Image (cartoon, rainbow, N blue to C red):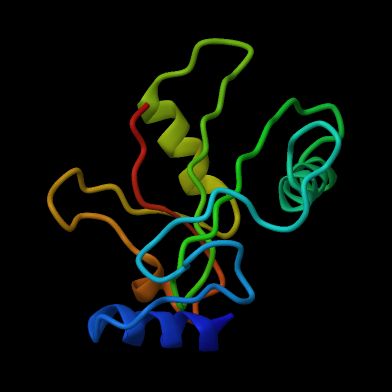
Length: 134
């Protein structure tokens, strides 16, 4: 995959034709809205795995859906997560809970550059919460 990304990136810069081999579409400077094979219900195997792993880690009864997209970055995985609670909770309460969770680091300064990206988190074993909109 990384070799194809490199080859495609170079091709784009020198205006050569771009050929997709491993990926279903061009990956360089693009986002592919599926990972792995499609399941009968329209989700992908990667989305199914994400749901299964989340239920395994948190609670088998938790209700969730996932949409996985392939984004060509060199480091890590990223998620956009929307959480709904049974009872109302304020954004400040949610941030406090996340700050106390083992392995979570909330970095949300609400200013240009006041968040962390995968490059800055490389090599760390933590879950970074870069933006919380409450």
